[in-house]
Amino acid sequence: MGTSRLLIQTSERSSMSLGSQIAAHLPFLRRYARALTGSQASGDAYVRETLEAALADSALMESLAGGRVPLYRAFGKVWASGSGAAAAGDPASEHEAGAQARLGAITPPARQALLLTTLEDFTVPETAAILERTPEEVEALVAEAIAEIEREQTTSVLIIEDEPLIAMQLEDLVTGLGHTVSGTAATRTQARAAVAEAMPGLVLADIQLADGSSGLDAVDDILAVGTMPVIFITAYPERLLTGDRPEPTYLVTKPFQEATVRAAISQALFFGSTRPL
Image: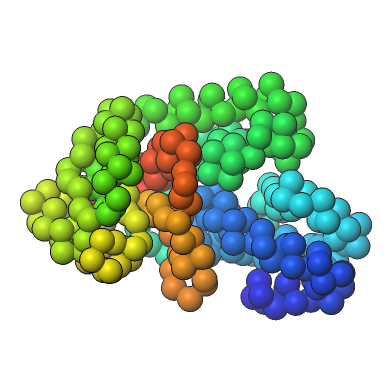
């Protein structure tokens, strides 16, 4: 059963305002689920199971009126149960296969704590409520995850961004992490030229470029000749979270916090493959 249909049923079982509230949070929960599991298919399966659990439990349904924290807490409990239905199936891509092979290197609680406090921008107390741990435990888990991720090798990064100041900010951030910048591009044509000169190990891409061309098309061009993790950094996340096409595992919304981009880069390099096809 699709998530849209489950939301309709949720609205029928509860007030329209609650159904609308859950719907507003759903794209971001799906983003978190994909990053946590390393697979769009697996992440969406866990989100569906969370909504099904809410439909079957009136007390859980009522608790979701509390906003994002109880919704993510409910999802976490479903994910921790590790149900066979959600975990079944092969990864859909080489990137997802690489992610699944590496999931065991960081403990599940540490992975959750890092994603919740960076990608999802929860505070430490909110993350503690979601994970049902103390704030001190959350801080220790985040430190554990960062220490493990920082052991990964550095790579070269292509930046596709048409705003010069943001491109410079991303260059400084990337080099500050120890990576090199293989090139910068403000258009789809420039991105193709940059890749022809040097194949990057990671791509940071906006979706709306200087000449009206699409960062999505630029990324498709790149992935046609090589494979590497891609992080979309955009002011229009709703254009990517539609369910109409394979959705990015790594998506950062503008205006962004540098800590969020750093975490996304670390996660993408840890879970993704940089080997050419």
